[in-house]
Amino acid sequence: NTPAPLLELDAVTVGYGAAPVLEALSLGIHEGQLVALLGANGAGKTTLLRTVAGQLRPSGGAVRFAGRPIDALPVEDRTRAGLALVPEGRSVVAELTVDENLRLGALRLPPRERRAATAAMYALFEPLARRRRAAGHELSGGERQMLALARALVARPRLLLLDEPSLGLAPLVVAELLGVLRETADRTGLTVLLAEQNAASALAIADRGIVLGLGEIVADRPASELAADPALRHAYLGF
Ligand code: ATP
Image 1 (cartoon, rainbow, N blue to C red):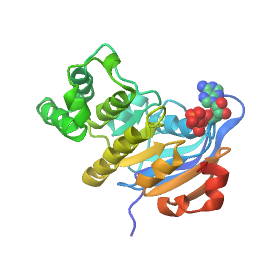
Image 2: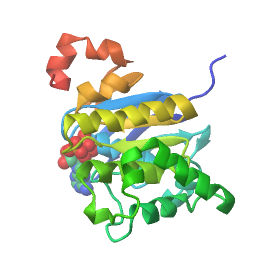
Image 3: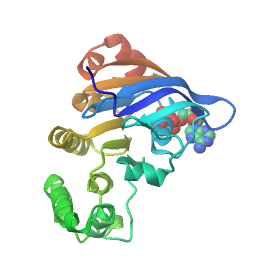
């Protein structure tokens, strides 16, 4: 029998005021899947990620993680349970060095595991290894996004929620970043929910694509199938 999904949204309704952004939305994501969450600007991708992370409370429905309802859990407890959100905008501590940022991320691990976990991030993100003494504010956009990602990964989350990492980055940098993400998922079994406007890049590395349109799921299919569907590409994916 199939295992239960690692993440389950069950008829989730959530928004900011009277009108919901997502209405009775249900989906399940299995351990080890790399899922691209696509859809136009304003479709509700960020809203969905923030709901899973615990920053927004649904007005209806339930969210389960690893088989457990997490609706009542504050953000901090969700992080401890293995959920990590990398918000849009490459949040790193600008005044701290690359190394200090990574060590902050590693504080969630037992002390004797921190050094090895940090070293593993330098092996994965070579540009960061070369810049380990640079301050956050000295980094390029691509380096900052790598650091934001590495700072989340260093604590070995089970589910990574990644919001729009490609924003404002050159295509080559995007490819490198998403390549590392794919490699990490393959090697560690990390589960990823990747919100992207850049559908072509996201589908190139994803197992599955979910397209949001006006608060509901308009497509949920293997990534290669979605990328090859001209009608869907034209209507929702912009490539
Ligand atoms: P983007 O790529 O712009 O982040 P998105 O698909 O992530 O798009 P959301 O950011 O989830 O979309 O926004 C969904 C809807 O919710 C939009 O209509 C947006 O205007 C609205 N919205 C988002 N954040 C807020 C907020 N803090 N207060 C009120 N409305 C909001």
